[in-house]
Amino acid sequence: MFTLAIANQKGGVAKTTSAANLADAAAEQGARVLLVDLDPQGNATSLTDATPRLYEGNAFGKPQQLTVSDALHAAQERQGAGTQAGTVFHVAVPAGEHWSARLQVAPANQDLAARNLDQFGGADQRLALGLSGDGVPYDLAVIDCGPALGGLFVAAMHAADAVLLVTEPADNALEGLPRTVEVLEAVRAQRGSGAPRLLGVLPTNVARQTRPTQLLGFMRDTYGPQLLEPVPRRAVVRQAEGAHAPVRAFGGPGRDIADVYSRLATLVLEAAGVRTRAEVS
Ligand SMILES: Nc1ncnc2c1ncn2[C@@H]1O[C@H](COP(=O)(O)OP(=O)(O)OP(=O)(O)O)[C@@H](O)[C@H]1O
Ligand SMILES: [Mg+2]
Image (tube, rainbow, N blue to C red):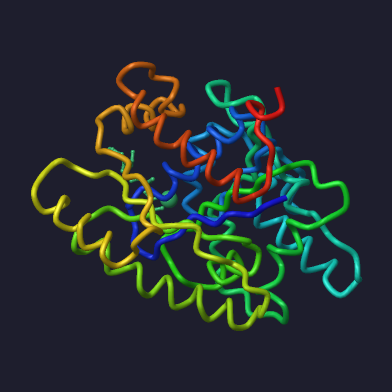
C-alpha cells in the first residue's frame, strides 16, 4: 500500500476536497483506496457521507463512534508488541452511495483533537503502525490532514510515502507552504528513509483573475516541475460538497474538475506502482 498525505497548514485551501475527489478518482480507476480522515473537524467523513460504526462506549451506555482516534488508541496498546497493528483498517467503513464502490473511509470526529496533544512515547509512530499489517486490503491510503502542524500532522509525515501540498494561489494561503515543507523536511531527516517525498504542489480553487494568475506564475518559478495541473474555481465544487458527493457525479458542470482529479489520480497510482484497470484490461 502506498500512503499519500494531503497537506497545508493553511485552512480552507481545498485539502479535503482534493483528498476525497482524488481518492474517489483512484478508486474509479480500479485501485482499492482508503481515505483516512486525520482532522478532528471530520470534514472528509462528512463529505464522503461515511457512517462510523458504533460501539458501547462509556459506563453510561451511550454508543460511541468508532473512529481513527480509537485506531490510534489501539495502535498505542499494541506498540512494542512487535506486531503490525493495522488498526486503522479496523475502523474503515464504505463511503456513501455517490462515491466509488472501492472507496472506504477511516472516519474522524472531535475525539481526534485529544490525539493532537498525545505526547506519550512513540506518538509519532502510531498512525504508521495503524496503517501497517499483513494482507493490507488497500492499494492506496490518502490521508486528509487538518490545518495544523501539531502531533497529528507529524504522525502523518511518519506514515506517508509521499506528500501532496495543496494551496490556493492567494497571498495568505501561500504562506502556509514553507512551514509545512519545514516539518516535512524535519521528518525526512529523522526517518532517514527518503520518505515522505514531495509528490507535487497542487494549485486549487484557481480563479481566472489577474492576481491568482500572477501567483500561479510565482509558484511555477518556485516549484518548477513539481507544480501540478491547477484545479479551476467552479461553483459546482461547493454544490457537490453540499450534496456529499464527488464532483464527477455532477456531470457536465463538474467535468473539467473531475478530469483534473482523474489525471492526478493516474499520476499518484503510477508513483504508487499500482496497475490501473486501463492497464490491466
Ligand atoms: N475548485 C474549487 N472551486 C470552488 N470551490 C472550491 C474548490 N475547491 C474547494 N472549494 C471549496 O472551498 C472550501 C474549502 O475547501 P476544503 O474544505 O476542501 O478546504 P480544506 O483545506 O480541507 O479546509 P480545512 O483546512 O478547514 O480542512 C469548501 O467549501 C470547498 O467546497
Ligand atoms: Mg479539510
